[in-house]
Every structure is written in C-alpha cells, then in structure tokens.
Image 1 (tube, rainbow, N blue to C red):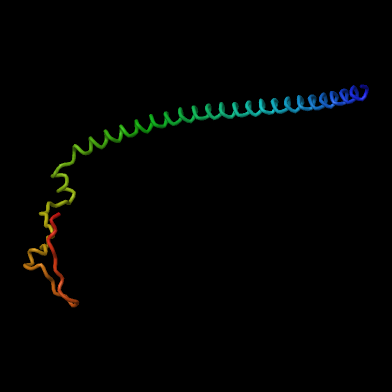
Image 2: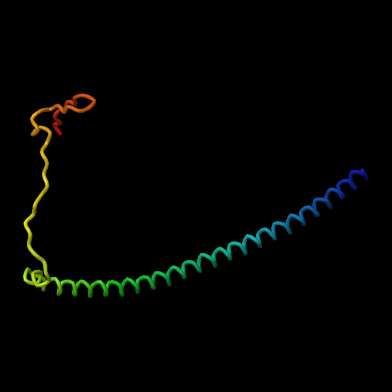
Length: 128
C-alpha cells in the first residue's frame, strides 16, 4: 500500500508540473495572440484613415480639374462659333472637288478566268 501511495504522489506531482507549464504556455500564447490582434487592428485603422485622406485629396483634385474642363469647353464653344467659310478662305484654305479612286470588279473584265504563267485561274462569284 505504501508503494501505491508513493506512486500516486509522484504521479500527482508530475501532473502539477505539467499543468503549471501548460498554463504558462497558454498564457503566453494568449498574450502574444492578443498583441498580434492589436497590431493588426492598428494597421487596419491606419490604412482606413490614410485611404480617407487620399480620397478627400482626390475629390479636391477632381473638382479643380472639372472646373478647368468647364472653362476649356466654354472657350472652345466661343472660338468654334467664330469659325466660318470666310475665315477659312482668309487663312488660305481652298475648296476642292473630291475625286475618288475606283477599280473595276472581276465581273466587269468580261470573263471569270485569268491566264497566267502557271495556267488559267477560274473565279467564282461570291454571294456575300
């Protein structure tokens, strides 16, 4: 009986040592996980703030560019109203008649075959 009691005490002391080490290890793991989550939260929060600042800067830039585009459109319209045929003549432009280049189709040549150095080639009509 005495040997069984000694074995039980030895077993219980080993379990306590294991439990104390496990508790310390789990506490460290939980603490490190908590620190990692805090760092991740700060990083995400910093990115959100940075993106908000960038968006506000981009919106201000868009407003300025939109105003500039409106001014340029107004200037274009005022200039384009002054352009007419007399202005173009005074700048040296001349009115010309259009001449277009045309070619005859193969049907207009009179036959559907062409004789060449290799032999004659027969063409078929394309309905497309």
